[in-house]
Image 1 (cartoon, rainbow, N blue to C red):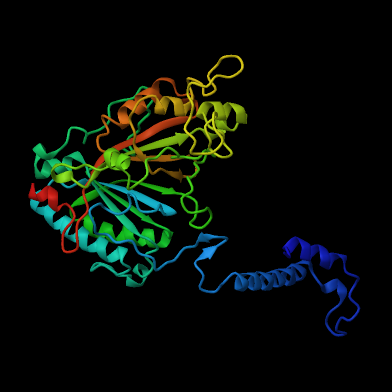
Image 2 (cartoon, rainbow, N blue to C red):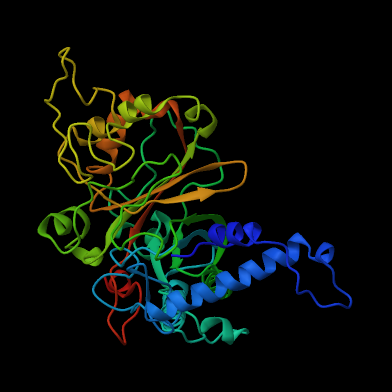
Length: 416
């Protein structure tokens, strides 16, 4: 394979050119810029030939991985809302709103009807009615919109329909929650492989929502770009750790028992917990790799537990080293997280707000009080990772079930 470096080296080692045109050009006038321009042009030709031999144009893979297809759509309708078990996209935006005082049950019915139409249009690559830039809706790039209801929204319909877990989480001793990224009455989780598509969808939905609610907070997250890793790879957070290895597999009995609710107006829905976790990366940079791996309980290179070889090997919490100590320490993150029987389905993303970086920890479950809270309490007590992370935002929402074609978002709540 010919590389740019090889081409540059070859050119630099050539003998001086002697067949230059006699007018207007000398060897001295051949600048480095011109040299590199020529090299890059040659490299482009080589790249084009390589692409052609790999099946381009028109191929949807690059080195065996899928690349972005702007026309690809994910249906908005079905038993469950899209964006929970659909393959993750590169970009996501979480938008929380506070309902206006006058937004009652009748107004919520109108809001749900408008949101249904907007979501179905945008995710299919069509402009909604309020779209003044319809051309921007033509590239859905796997756009999904997942809608969550906060406690006050359910109260506006009927307080008796609000589950006990739909409330702010109990306080944890290490939390440093500010005023910026907590709670909310309505959540829109907008996800796409293309940031332009995402921004356009967010603006269109705001046009509809603002008659009924006021913006409360916004959080943007990201993963690796699609095609940069093999499909199904576990994402890495900004500490370099694989994040979400022990997730239950969608479509299995374990997943259904962990995530999907099966009674009342939330049948087919779930609960989402969103925690904003700031990473103290400057102090994280000061510790060596062995300490990092002991704190997590995993090998950083492949994500395997310290007692295993591959990422998905089950950790052996009984294994001892030569001195009789636990191979996976008592303070290791994975030991604390896995000490009980509780499970959640993680779908976290990274965030970078310039002077602050971290993780938007997102998990789905039937009941946060019975699933997320016990796990977080154990982590709060003795997780060494607490030295380098700080929880600064927290919210819980009920994710309504999906709707069938001709149906409407939130219809089960309104009909209860």
